[in-house]
Image (cartoon, rainbow over all chains, first blue to last red; front, side, top):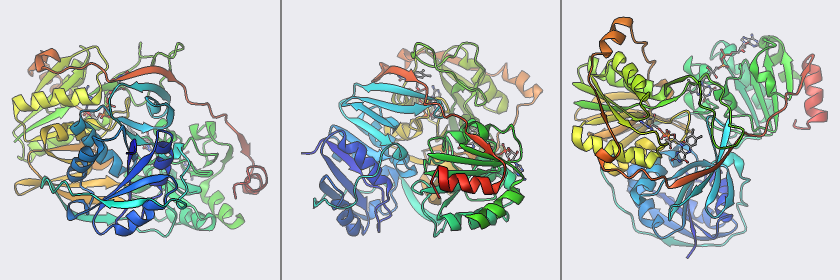
Length: 309
Length: 249
Ligand SMILES: Cc1cc2nc3c(=O)[nH]c(=O)nc-3n(C[C@H](O)[C@H](O)[C@H](O)COP(=O)(O)OP(=O)(O)OC[C@H]3O[C@@H](n4cnc5c(N)ncnc54)[C@H](O)[C@@H]3O)c2cc1C
Ligand SMILES: Cc1cc2nc3c(=O)[nH]c(=O)nc-3n(C[C@H](O)[C@H](O)[C@H](O)COP(=O)(O)OP(=O)(O)OC[C@H]3O[C@@H](n4cnc5c(N)ncnc54)[C@H](O)[C@@H]3O)c2cc1C
C-alpha cells in the first residue's frame, strides 16, 4: 500500500504537466499511487502508469467525472484518500476547487500551495501574496495538500511501469451539472509550463495591441500572460492573468511589458529566473525585481525587440 | 431567498507587509486593515441579487476580533441587512471557519452563501469549498457571473483554460473571482444607516465548534530577496544581455 495518493490533472485525453511537478513532491513523502478520474480517460491512465516511480494507477472512469465536477470528484477522493497518509493535487483551478472539499469530508485541515517539504509533517507555504513563507507542522492524520507546481521540478514522464487498477465510481451527487466551456485556444505553450513568458499590462492600451506581444511570443516560443488590469480591461481572457489571484509562473525568462509591478502581480512571477521589464516610467516598481530593465515607450521597444530576437 | 455573506478583516491590499524579526509572524501592529477584496465582491453580488428581487435578506458574518465589527459595518453600509460577529482573537483555520459558518447556516437557513474565493492574507482558497462539503451543497467557485436560472443558479467560473458554466441546485455555495463585479463604495447616508442595523455577537463555543488548530506555524520567514538588476540603454543591449549574459534566448 502506497502512502501518497496523487490526483492526476488531465483533460480525459492527456495528462497535464502539473501532475509531474506534484509527483516530485509526492515522492519526497513516500510511494505514490495516482488517481485518474474522468470519462473515457483510459489513455491518461496509460500515460500516468509510465511516470517514473508510480506505484499503481487507480482509474475511475465514469460519466460523473467527465467534467471534473468538484462535488463528485471530492466524494471519490475522500473515499479513496481515507486509506493514505497524504492526498495531493497540483495547485490548479481543478485542484483548488476539489481538494478543500475532499479535505472537509475527511475532516482534515488542508494545506494550500505547498512549496517546500521539510519532513513528514512539516511543510512550507507562501501566504500574503508570497511576501512571507510559513513553515507549518500538520497534526492531522491525513495530510491533504495542493502543490505549488513551480516549486518542484517535473518527474520523468517515462520509465515507470505501474499497473492500472479500475476503481468503482462514488456516483453522481447531482448537486451541480456541466453546461458549457469556453476554452482559450492557443498553439502556444501552456502559461504555467512555458520556458518563456511574455506578459502585457494596462500599458498595452488595447486588445488589438496585444498582437504585438503575440508576435514576440511567437518568435520566442513563449506563452502570453497579462496583468489583472489588462484582463479587467478586456484586452485578453481571464486565463492570462498572472499573480496572487491568477496563475503562478516561474519561467526561465519573464518579459513584463507595460506592467507597473504591483505586489499582486509580482506574487505570480517573481520566482522567474530572469526578469525583463519594459516600461516608460523609470520609477515603476517592476524595475525593483527586473534583472534587465528598459525605460522606453513599449510601442517603440516591442517591435524592435521582436525584430532583433 | 436569504443570502449569507462571510466577510473577513485582513491587512489592506495596498500594505507591503513585514515579517516580524523573531519570525513568529507578520507585523500587524498599526497596519491598515480592510475587508478582504474578494469579500467585498461577495457583498456586492448579494446586494445586486437583492436589488433584482432575487433575494430578500442579506446577513453578513465575520469570524475574528472585536474590530471585525468595522468590516461588518462596511458590509451593512453596502447593503447587508444585519450582521453576526463570531468573536475570537485566535487565528482560526479554514476548516474551523467552515464549521462555524455551517452552524450559522443551520440556524439561519439561507439558500445561498457567497464567499470570497480567497483571503489575501492566508491565501488558502479553502473556506467556501469546505463549507459546501460540510453542508452537502453544490459549489460554484471562482465565479465571474451568477445568474438566477429557474430553481437554481447558473454560474460562470474562471478556470485555468478559460471559462466554464455550471448549473447549481439551490441551496448552494458560491465563491467570487475578480471579474464578478466592481463593489460599490458605501455612501455617507448608508454608512450612517448601517450604524443602526442589528449586529449580534457570539463566540465559537456558542456554535459548539472546536477551533483547536490542526496546523502549527513554526516559523514565518521572508522570501529570498531579488536584487534589482541593471537598466539597459536600448533594445540592442537588452538582446545582447539576454543572449550572452543570461543565455536565455
Ligand atoms: C484582491 C486583488 C487581487 C489582485 N490580483 C492580481 C493578480 O493576480 N495579478 C495582477 O497582475 N494584479 C492583481 N491585482 C491588481 C494589482 O493591484 C494591479 O492593479 C495590477 O497588477 C496593475 O496592472 P498593470 O501593471 O498592467 O497596470 P498599471 O499599474 O496601470 O501599470 C501600467 C504600466 O504601464 C506603463 N506604461 C503605460 N504606457 C506605456 C508605454 N506606452 N510604454 C511603456 N510603458 C507604458 C506605465 O508606466 C505603468 O507602469 C489584484 C488586486 C487586488 C485588489
Ligand atoms: C502570521 C500568521 C500566522 C498564522 N498562523 C496560523 C496558525 O498557526 N494556524 C491557523 O490556523 N491559522 C493561522 N493563521 C491564520 C491563517 O493564515 C488564515 O487566516 C486562516 O487559516 C483563514 O484562511 P483564509 O482566510 O486564507 O481562508 P480562505 O479560504 O482563503 O478564505 C476564503 C473566504 O472565506 C471567508 N472567510 C475566511 N475566513 C473568514 C472569517 N474569519 N470570517 C468570515 N469569513 C471568512 C471569506 O469570505 C473569505 O473570502 C495565521 C495568520 C497569520 C497572519
